[in-house]
Length: 125
Length: 200
Image 1: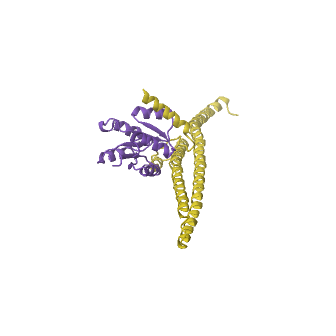
Image 2 (image 1 turned 90 degrees about the horizontal axis):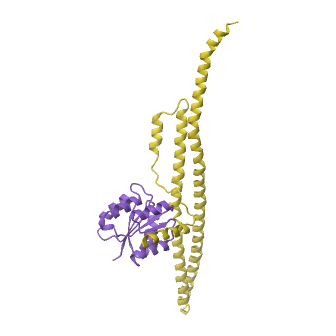
Image 3 (image 1 turned 90 degrees about the vertical axis):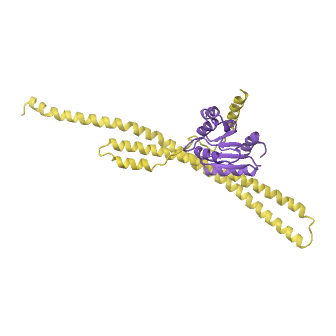
């Protein structure tokens, strides 16, 4: 059965591009437009959630808030979370690490780099 | 000729009023200084963001057009190749079909990669939309400062007008540093930070 990845970003272009790249490699993709939407989608998921890719700057609940919330939930303490953000300042990376992200990719990103990170945690789909 | 003491007494309140008026004007001018200088500092930032958008949009569009041109040329070659295969098949000569088919498969794969590259370049939309939001938010800040100036000046701006303007504004979430330029160095730094974290 295909592994499930949740992609969270307020840019429909990024959601489409990342989803296409992942589906092309055989992963099942669920998308959300911000942190709150992500939490709702996670709570509605029937199967397992294997990995999360999230942006940082989002309305309602940002990426930090989302990771922080998920890390407090026993079920998602170990779920790999990749931050995908155009924020490249040291403070952002440090904060990302502090809240519990597993990796941090800077936008614009190469799809090959994203897939390398994903397969590092999940194998080849 | 009027007595000078009487004259001074008559002039004194007028001079006092004049001095008060000048003081008020100086005060108002001082109040104007802050919003004016704040607005002035924001204009170049907004201009810089708009220039970046124009430059990066053009660059991305150019890249996409190059890729599309390659795809079109290749598709024309594929079309010619398929016509040749059909003609040969009709003539009963299929000896060169496997080699030609291999070439066509190679071209189709190349076009697929180019199409993927176009999708990659389309990330500029996410970056430029953040730059646009940043520029828009700077312009809104300038607008607010200009209203502060109008309020200081006699006549001012009525409160409902300001409320209408504020309520028409949408909330903006953006990274003020979003940029399409190569971020390989930053990515390397990020990787090394996370590697340090893992080794701890």
